[in-house]
Length: 196
Image (tube, rainbow, N blue to C red; front, side, top):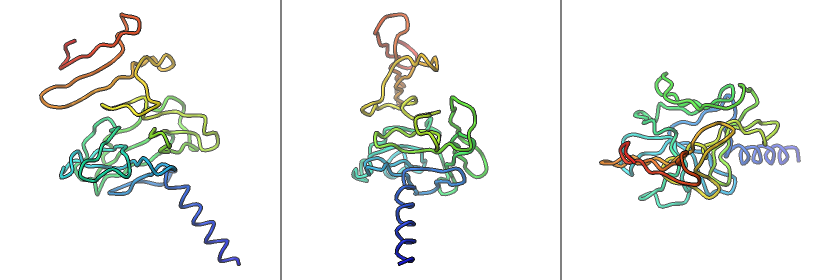
């Protein structure tokens, strides 16, 4: 009877931990976090099916591996030796480290917290939130979209942070940015290689 209770407890902990990165844990190589509903996964993914550089990204978990669609990239920082790269959370910030060098860090909006965790939500939004009060979100991937938006994400002015949330596409030979034009009401502007 005691053995059954211990196994049940361990199994439930593993299931809960699959969408959450806790302080002291890391994600590396081909490990992923999977949203509770099983739709989205976060990990270090190649830029193309046979690509050598990897990026921190969010994608649909059950998409064909030949043509995965990545919705979010962690600031498009290329990871060359992804087997030696790790994603971890420390003092309320996310870090990508490769061979002892920090390649990227999130910019959380609130004070450092030792109770912060990183969670891939059922919406595909990757958030840093307080472990004790999940409504306290200090950073989210929806505020830093790449070239695609998921339902629930938005473009526009974040009045709290004072930032313009925009879409950016890097596809040679062009680099495009779509953002709110602050000089007009409800207007968008697209920049292609720095020109509107």
